Length: 86
Image (tube, rainbow, N blue to C red):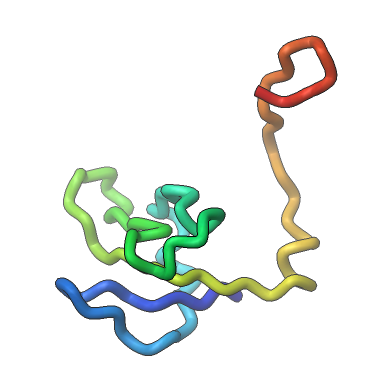
């Protein structure tokens, strides 16, 4: 489960679970890795049709550590050949 504060104009709504059915159209900004206090959207939800119209945005993401560790990643970041990720 992932929780976040839905962005409604300039307001941040109460922390609530983000419905799982919305994740198919999610695009992350990775702002959640920064200490920006929820001022910028962390994830933007687009419709399943692929339209550019934003359905919802969320800030201040929270995840279950136990569930996060069960994610099966399907791709890897490219390597520079020197042992670090680029």
